[in-house]
Length: 463
Image (cartoon, rainbow, N blue to C red):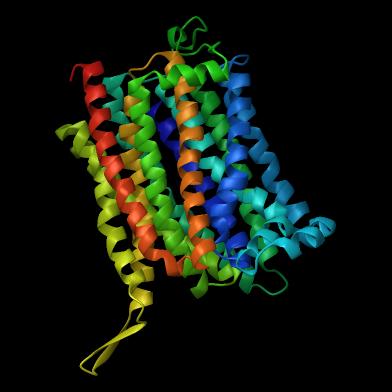
């Protein structure tokens, strides 16, 4: 069972890397990084709520086994439809009439909003790609895994699942780079063929996820797979009543605060870095190949963080939980300092010159990669362990609300803050000090939330 869960997470990470690479290569190179906050607030947030409402509706009517398949299949349909039908005819999907009405009333410094509407299929692709991490990995995958573990087995096996599963980026990174570079450099082909190849790989890994999940259920002991078991039955509390129920639970509120703080902190760093990255790699293929390298670093970082996870958990849950904000802070602060420093070069006694923007870009790359590595190993392992002692209602409805609503509120709220900065300053490069300040406040909230969550967790598990 453990090996199947590791393989399933590896496939989820493969597809996450494909979507993460494409959603940015396709849209950011056209409209700039400043468009991201507007998409996250205006498109990703509503899509996440639609998924949550649908998930809650189906969870009250389908078994967990069927729900997993029903929730995953739309992603597998959308990807080939996008790559083979929509993207080759992208311009024909542009709503010309709406653009004619919208263009005159949008300020010049917010011109990318017109681009969001013009390239609405890319905007929708970005939203669905964002949904993969929270909906498929955090909800579908981890809910299935949590069903078959108790606190003791979770503490022992979750670090292994996150370490090996997240390290799949060591393979997916070079694979993405190879697919894009080979197709772009081949005569008679190009970016379109690269997109088709990546789409095929996405569907392939998606089918493997479904097969592995089905095999996990077949290997499950009958007493666990029995529908009478509360861990495998659907819950009957409606969505709104469930939300009110969760708000009255301090334990879940602490998990929600941890998730909220993480989303705000990582969103501040990512957008600041990408606003500089797109200036260096303005074409789709170049940007995609660079992100393939970042995925490789992410995989190596996941292996390192995964090796640290069981050691830190043996010390205490707190030691493992505090590691992610510490790693993120140690790499983000130097990046922000360099980004706020306006000089492009510094000369050392006339002997050599140091290109500060390029150094900042490299530090930002390691901050982004290690932040993601720590998220899918240390952060996820410690977070998922805290769900294990919960009853079925809080585990399923609470997890769905936290992973979708809270994470989206965190990202959309920070995106709204970034929208204000873009409107006031004209670009993110001129608002780095504000982004750094918001990052520091989010880290402070994160540390306080971890302290409270750890206290609740240890009270429930008597550790």
